[in-house]
Length: 53
Image (cartoon, rainbow, N blue to C red; front, side):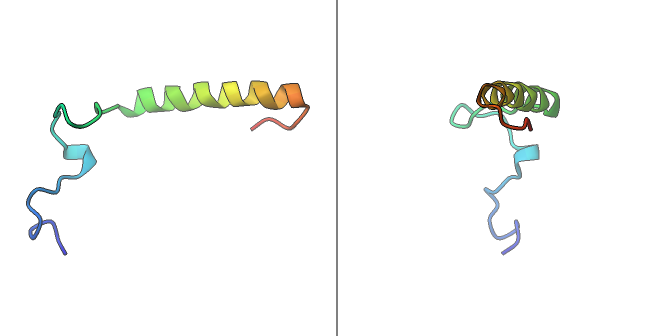
């Protein structure tokens, strides 16, 4: 089932902005969010005396 059979399928990378989809996020913003989540998670682990990630 290639993309030719399903012309409406687009990869996320080449997707056009449409209001029905969440906004596209660049890699830098994604990395920043992951770092923030890891820091928050590590704060909980530290309180529990567990090893940090």
